Image (tube, rainbow, N blue to C red):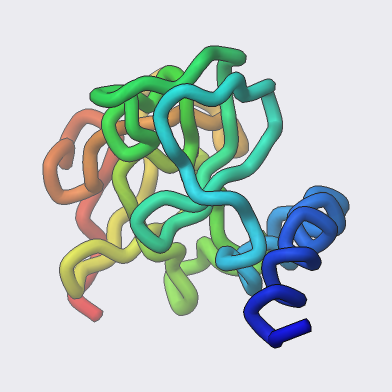
Length: 146
């Protein structure tokens, strides 16, 4: 058996084992998760990689072209970075389609932004298709340059 054959044989086992990882550990091994592709049934909570980013299913559906994770925040949320991040000194790198937490800090384009919205309590979350610099004044406040 060649190494390639062995890798193909082990891949399903590795993907099943990856399901048991918490999000923080899963982010250390994005490549362990199956790649998004059109035509598969997905369930809430399952994780798939797309464009080098790990996403979690928000609504059960059958995937299709045009509904890629980075285009459909109602269906997918980028898995958030280490929960120890989110401070002014250690902001979370922002990506489209991620779940943002009110009261935490995010980096985007060399700047730092605070996720804040009138009427929302710190700790609440929202999935946004936009990057912080695109919606300053609505969901974010620019804090400082990094």
